[in-house]
Image (cartoon, rainbow, N blue to C red; front, side, top):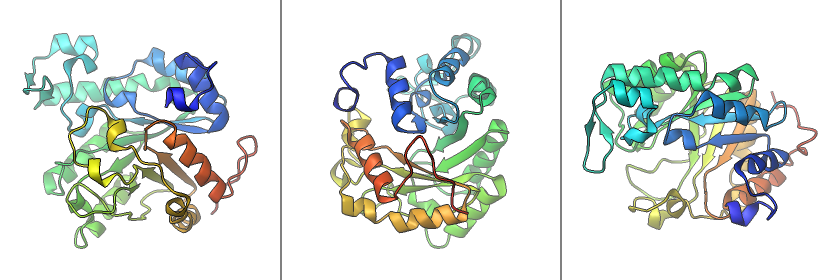
Amino acid sequence: MVRAWYPPTVRSAADRLRYYATQFDTVEVDSSFYGVPTPATARLWAERTPPGFVFHVKAFGMLTRHGVRPEGLPAPLRVAHSFELDRYGRIVHPSQALREETFALFHEALAPLRHEEKLGLILMQFPPYFVANENNREYISYSVRLLAPDKVAVEFRHSSWVEPGETPRTLDLLTSLGAAYVCVDEPRMDGPTVLPPLVAVTTDTAYVRFHGRNAAMWNARVSSAAERFKYLYTIDELQEWVEPVRRLQRQTGTTYLMFNNCFADYAPRNAKQMMSLLEAAPREDPAPPLE
């Protein structure tokens, strides 16, 4: 995306963020999934963006039950704790103490964004093996408590959470926790690791993630996320979401649409097209949310 979308004169990470913030008023931070950010990094994010810009931050993998590499942890935690590694060199079965200290450092790292009122939602994207059961419901509640008072958005990747008999229970849980259900657009195919485009509201903020519809690569082992999400939406496919998005806007104070089809310039290109379809106001004069 760096080469395909940013102007040739925009070369550094700082300049890329500044340029991005002239085109959009919110961003989803993905790097925080692979390593706990530092307060210094979050302070730079805040300094390089205009007032009102919002950062949604993806939770570090350990917080969402993913295996993570030790180097993703802050150095003090690597020294203070012992841990078990799987054959891929990822930490598995971390102790409760390690997990809770990681939650605490993740929360601390976002203080500069919080102070500047630029912190949006913490995206808790759970893995495909995180199925609907009582233990995992309790873990969601536990996670939301540890991240409080920050607001959380929960994304599921196993369809058991939205099966006909389970959906009301899932949405009731998130509503009771004040956590946003993440609506998704994914390949239109059957299988436990793909979710339907369920439009649901559990808080006063709605959150939609567009992952693309690359069915051939959805469950494939890939070397980078860009391979899985290599999909450019057509205008007709984006149009399918206009009415659902309007519905979300009517039911909430704020609705965020995030494009995760992170190949070349696909995400910003589709985001601009979606803004046009929704008749979004220019960046300089944002339209008020629909009540």
